[in-house]
Amino acid sequence: MWAFFSRRLRMWLILAIAVPLGGWLAGKLATVIENRRGPNTVSRTLRQAGGWLQRRSKGPLAARTTEKDRPAR
Image (cartoon, rainbow, N blue to C red; front, side, top):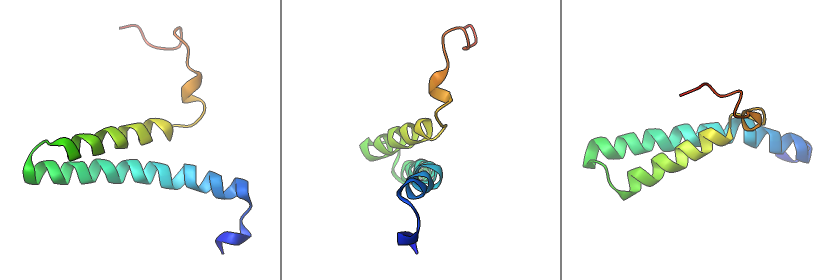
């Protein structure tokens, strides 16, 4: 069935479904590891990977924000 999808549709499916799901899964796995053994290198790496994937899955409009669009600190 995967072969019947066009290349562009397959890429969209991966970016729209697999990347956010992978980020969520990495975060959950990091939480499980931290609950069992405490914070360690593996859990920190999974958290970083999950955060990176979640930032990438917000779509192209998230990257277009400028300094004037961001709230003042």
